[in-house]
Image 1 (spheres, helix red, strand yellow):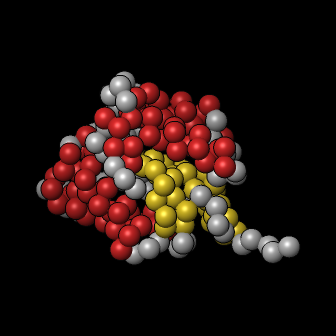
Image 2 (cartoon, rainbow, N blue to C red):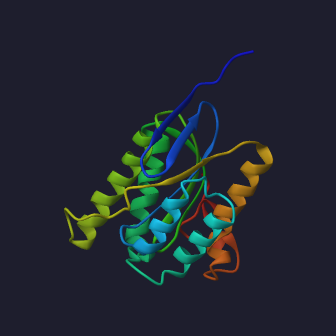
Image 3 (cartoon, rainbow, N blue to C red):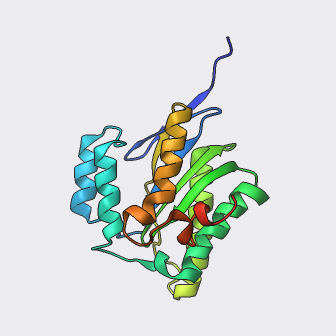
Length: 189
């Protein structure tokens, strides 16, 4: 029986990357989540995939605090171009699903490179382009930390893909997932 490799690194949250497994990754704009909430989740120091994650996502969907630059079509497209570049041009991952919301992004990928390289590449490329458009070069664009969860099985993969593509529906922004223009539901991935 062949053993799979698994890489691990830690920032504020642990980041596991099992070889050959899909990852669900979420990150937000710098300042999009109040620091009190960030501290509360960091103090738990546990995997926050269940209700806690959904609660954090619900708060971000409401965009009651911080920047909402991603609701600008030109800025949202910077993120999509970064995803497409990482998947197609650089071949760092297979892209299965994504959604760009007003202040955060969800993706479902299968990595072919180290996770930190993938997230730094996507976030760095998109941030440089977006900050140029916003005329705020040299400023933080993304929160440094990303949340990731490795997908355990096929049913969970489909549940996460549905969760990602239905995020704009759940947030009350559109009636059907394919109506949200900054999502894999409205494009062929």
